[in-house]
Amino acid sequence: MFWEKYTQSQIKSKVFESLSKNTNYRTENILGIPGTFLDTDIFYDDAPFLKDAPFLSVLIANPNHIGVHTLGDEHEDFFSGTHEIEKDLIKICAEEIFGAEPHTYDGYVASGGTEANIEALWIYRNLYVQEYLANLNEIAVVYSADTHYSIPKGINLLNLNGIEISVNQISREMVFREFEQKIESALANGIKYFIINVNMSTTMFGSVDDIEKMTNFLNLLHINYKLHVDGAYGGFIFPFTNIKNLFNFNNKNISSFSIDGHKMLQAPYGTGIFLIRKDFMKYVCTNEAGYVKGKDYTLCGSRSGANAVCVWMILRIHGSVGWTVKMHQLVDRATLICEKLDELKIKYFRHPDLNIVTIDANYMSQELAMKFHLVPDKHDVKPNWYKIVVMPHVKQGIIDNFLTELKNEQHFNLR
Image 1 (tube, rainbow, N blue to C red):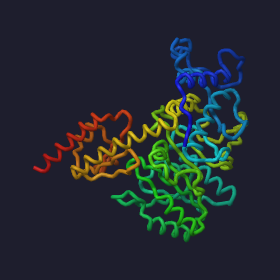
Image 2 (image 1 turned 120 degrees about the vertical axis):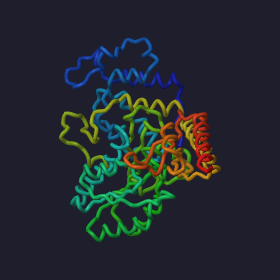
Image 3 (image 1 turned 30 degrees about the vertical axis):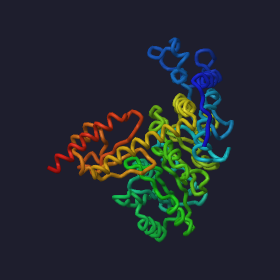
């Protein structure tokens, strides 16, 4: 896992060089593109600071990154310069973070983890329909009760069957016996094709599914399945804090990943990333997009090239070594919280390699949770859990203030 750290000067040079290779709305004869630079009444391009602001310069230039640029030369060439930056970003994520061999994957910057998760379901549904002539009632998506809501959303949109597996309320592990039973029951009831969603950190708890146990069972029964890893939260932290994990392209059972730049990476919202092995994207080619060179394979279609450039800039300014250090610092801070909770004998859940600490709601007041903006697992009824996410803005002083007030509450309740 290694990618080179760039200096600010190197990043600026690369971005402006790429931008110069794009078609320029201001200087070239462009009559056919249904787009333009950002409205000059609000966003003017002659501000002196723009020469030192590569992301803002790309944002104002407004390149469209429609399509999937890893599929070869067949893509819109109006913005080929910044497309190359997106391709380098996908390369870093696929090869350096998730261990793919060169030229064995495709990917693009999506609107977020939700789109990336639904993209995976869409691809596998179409694969089963086109290659196996499957009926939709023969396809099922399997996921845990702690899975992000984008999976049930995708099931609804794509008219698929959903099989939800309960989790242990203490360990947050999928109840494996139920997993086995529901797979066997689905087979008996006519389900022939499975899409398995595996969590590399759930959103509420930071729990990580046991991928090896699941795939061993599926392979033993010779199940026809495709496995998607939802790494929207964990993708930019878990591989760096648990380097021996099985969530990578070296695991032949995995076909695709979703990861989010707008969580751990501190990128703008709208910077999800979808990665998949080669020869799968064809199942969602929108042939009707004849006016788009190379067609379109994504749910969102047109999208801002500035977002892709921003994520690339963030990864390049840190390099793999710097990013690893940063993620370990967040995990260490979460560990200190847990040590204090242990002293106070407060019940919580936390995966040791992640920066989410989820506290049993019975151990704190709603007022304290609201004061420090802890997130409940439910908003419409009394919550069972409150979540702390140790992000870069969560400084030790804030943590200490929270823990002090929590300790005072415990003493008051014991009196």
